[in-house]
Amino acid sequence: MDHQAGLLRLGIFAAILAVMALWEAIAPYRPATAVRRPMRWLTNFGLLLLGAGLTRFTVGAAMIASAVLAQQQGWGLINLVGLSGWHGGFLGGLIAIVALDCAIYWQHRLTHIVPLFWRFHRVHHCDTEFDVSTAIRFHPFEILASALYKSFFVIALGADPWAVVIYESMLSGFALFNHGNVHLPGGFDRLLRRVIVTPDMHRVHHSILMNETNSNYGNILSVWDRLFVSYVDHTKTNDHDMQIGLEEFRDKRSQSLWGVLWLPFRQP
Image 1 (cartoon, helix red, strand yellow):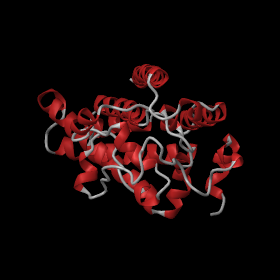
Image 2: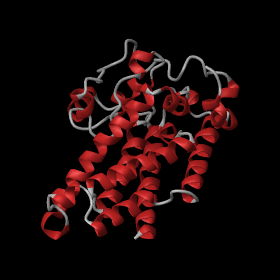
Image 3: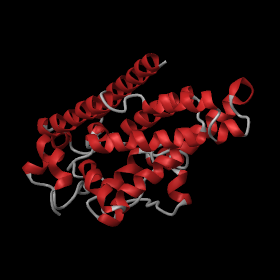
Image 4: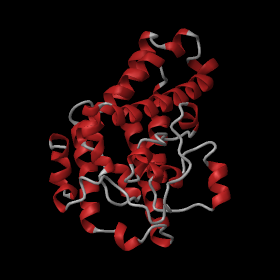
């Protein structure tokens, strides 16, 4: 199953990445000349490859393995209440997907609250522009820690392995979508963000103003930000022209691949 799940996730990721890159090329929201700097893409895609390599040779398919183990042993809330198997599989899978999305909301929020976690997460936030490549800009150690965190919740929930595959595919797909350098019509965006995170909603989270950075933590469902009082509707400035990134890491050194890999170990 690991091989099939990996190919499925890779195919979905590649397809959505291609669609979002094409959308950005045809109708970029922020100036394309600022976004499409070769150094940015080298850094961002370099981090993607390093993160994939690290997890491949360490925890690998930890979430799938955790789900299979929980299913075999009957562990987790979903198994305990009898929502596993054919009779309750759909409802159990839906509960797992929603619960995992809530868990990832809190993981994201904790990376902004806990100083040690923020040291690694600021690699994502020090990008000085915002496009689909920002979605893959994470320190490899944060990717590793996230896989272990999610595996714990998979076991606690007793999530079905295929529910985990679906959720992981949705998570990466929505990350590419809501980091897109695109803009939805105002009315449609407001309707859509009642349910899911949109690019305009998530762009606020990448503002250079820290009170805006510390908001809009949602990944798929937008309800968590409203429920846990972290929702900010819009930036203080026009989000078309707003500054993106972190004030202290805008120099060339901080934006290089080596610079972002070393960034968690630097001051401030």
